[in-house]
Image (cartoon, rainbow, N blue to C red; front, side):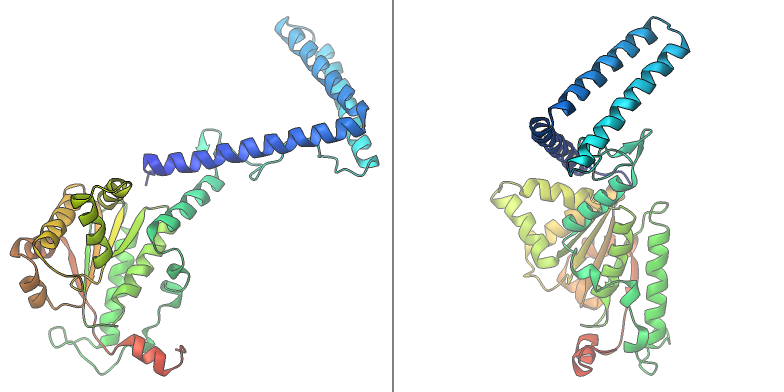
Length: 331
């Protein structure tokens, strides 16, 4: 997915910063060695003069043999420069421009295509902006375990055990990821406290961020706090955050129902989910509320939008956090 303009500008500013830094370092190297080894300055001037002569010859359609002679002369001067540097204790490339990425020479592009380092920079930026940078190092599909889900506890509606229910939820999560660029879809994760809803949303987030999608996570409390500040205070920078909330590829609203629910919250929630549906921007909502409780807590209009446009995934079982504490963090 394409980066937002602000994200692209942030990355390109970093490339510009690197270029300026390396040019500054090269200039310092030149001043240092030219003072210590005057012949190096002369060599630089001679290489420049020979290069200009070669350009004039090419513009004048000179013979190939003359161009070859210029190349030999420049190569000889470059070799003398390397020998002088080495003899005086400097690396042979001390007067060459250095790059963080030699492939694209810190431009971000190779033959008009984004360099691999650009993709890495994009992913790093997306991690920082997701509000999940540290937690995703621990909570991802590699660390997801079905061992915490019971083979005896069953969902009366489906007949599936807690473990089978979790396996089905993970399968749907992976389908969500695999179809993300082809199919607009939203997920509604619900169930008791500690059954893995937030963990599963983190797993999805990591996979999509690694694919350079823009993912933003908010607890319900933090989300409505941000929206309230923009509505009532118009604080600096909050408007940009609200735009990110509506425009990011995936918005995760965690623990919906734990915030202080009032008319503003209900209105802001509807506007958020409805606007993202209209823009075909995916959303994951997790809540500890049952569907009946959710319908009673929020408006019928909100419940209708969610049931019509979200895949409902229920997780059941014992509180995994308590199980981990009893096991001392071991699985």
